Amino acid sequence: GASWQRCRVHFARNVLARVPKGHQDVVAAALRTVFVHPNPAEISAAWDRTADLFARQFPKVKELMDSAKTAVLEFTAFPPDHWRKIWSNNPLERVNKEIPVFEWVSPDRGDGLSTVGDRALSDIVVVAGR
Image 1 (cartoon, helix red, strand yellow):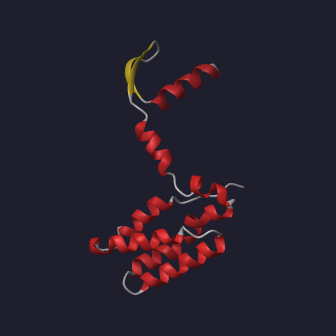
Image 2 (cartoon, helix red, strand yellow):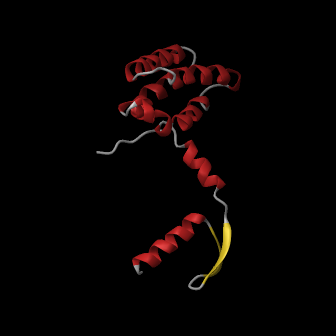
Image 3 (cartoon, one colour):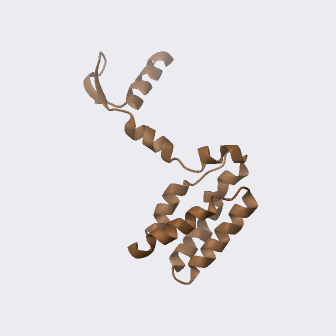
C-alpha cells in the first residue's frame, strides 16, 4: 500500500508559526538536528527528545510534534538512500514555480495563457482521442 509523507519543510513552518520570532532560529536549529541521525530508531528518539525539550516553553509545539510524528517520519520506513528525495516536497514545488507560464495558439481553444501542465493535459486528451 501507499504511505503518506508529511513534508518536513512545511511541518517546520507550522512549528515556527507557534513560536515567538525571537526564538524561531533556536527552535528551527533544534528541529533540524532530528534529521541528521542515520537510522529510524535514532531519528525517532531525537524527535521525542526535541519535543520534550520544547514542552515547557512551547507546549503547542510539543503538541504538534506529538500529533505529527508518524506523518513526518514516514520517510524512515524506506531505505536511507531515498530519504533526501522523499522527506520534503519542496524540490517539486520549486520546479513547479520555475515552469514558465507561456502563451500558445490552440485551434480548439483560441489564444490563451496556459501553464506547462495545461498544455500537457491537452496533449494527453488529444492522444486519448477525446
